[in-house]
Length: 120
Image (cartoon, rainbow, N blue to C red; front, top):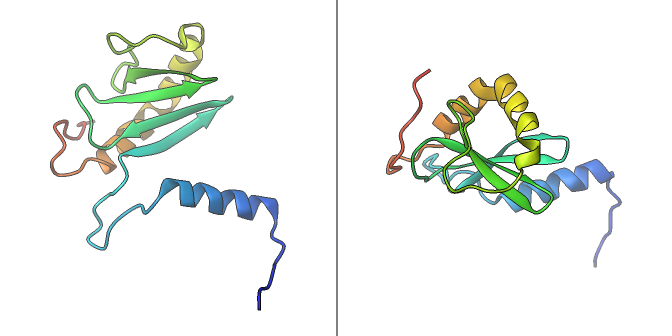
């Protein structure tokens, strides 16, 4: 016997987002995901990656483009193209949330990560 229950749209959207994130930690508390969404603004999506190369950075995605920026000073990483016309918006967001980015970066560092935590 199968039952169907109608759920509120926001409940379904939250559950779908949770499934897309995958298992957040194993039984020892070690983070399993390599990517973490840390912010959204005006259609932009901001990610940090747990096992990354230096310098500490975040990636911004918008309308099929992406670019990476330093967490410390919001400078575009060398070789990154895309989102040039939105760099002012990204810098303004960074000014407001730099401390939160540092906290998220530090919280996602696995023990074997080549880039350690950022000291505030």
